Length: 489
Image (tube, rainbow, N blue to C red; front, side, top):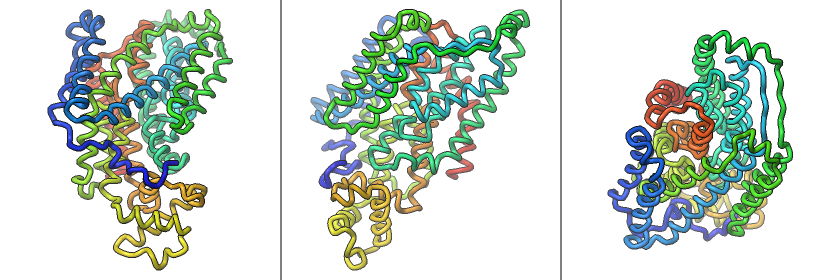
């Protein structure tokens, strides 16, 4: 835990002396436009020059932050976030590439629904990235005789995003919340009805679409697969140990610096050099997909800094927004920004809007005195909220309270956890960031990785705009609206 003199999340995000120029959002907009349109309009040129576009636009923003704002600390923080992101994505990509799952027999719509439901559950145990990297290759092989874009997109919707809404392991935004003080099982306790609604609706829609696709498959092709006996086999089980190492590293503290990243890279190297060649060949394994993701997200992480900083520095101007604002706000930005820093930005906005310095100071005093003078010391308009915050700290961080090692982040989070009227804000940004991350290829890290693997294996995947107009708008948006109407209106 951080020391009590640690600056608050709202102040930490980030210690700029001035707001970035709004025009500096344009490089991010340009990069999004290039990712969306370039593969359609000039695919050959984009395939050769996308690194120059990503690096060039990122360099413009980094130069402004260095020379115009002198925000070297923020650049370092963003670089560390990117390094952690790509080490996690890359290590899971390598380890999952050493596990070969063989499924034979006819894959009916019902079987596919069960497989996607399994992926949604595994997403909370292995993370959306881990589950996606482990299951996308067998998913493609299972459906290869009738594979269409909907197989890839629904996989991204369910396994790579919505399924991971229950644990900090499930999706990076929830892991950031865990680091800020959200108890491990708190999100599962409060979000499982939302998870069940979202996953259930998507599975129902997939079943309808896949059933129509199944009936269109030529009978001669189907007969070949029907005659094959059902068969399931997993090769490369030794990589499960490396997968366990990665999951353990995710839960490590950030200090000492780069320890987590070093463990992730060591696990990836151990997996790569101990996996038998025939397993990699069966998975068509190479480093092209992770290379493409690493290059594009360099530009994304760099160019999205002005947008996130603008949001954080204007947190106090939000007034008293409703949970619906945080659901739609964090969600819409998570559709085009990486959803992890977007979650952190909106969490900072909540802290800035509702937790003032007096509350933090009085809670710190209660921690130092062990709460002995709560009845006499606590006073003012926020007395009840202060007592409830201290009670939440004792419930969720008893050891830290006893050792007087509670940081400002934990106090701010306990304020939200201990006061029931604010609980729904955490639920809203959790669901918004995780669910809406499925709306575009860049909303969540695994999305683009799944697309890259599918493209490499010859699967049909929709373009950036095709993904949005053919799948997000008619399928994801109705589900998101239903979740809003039931839980956040």
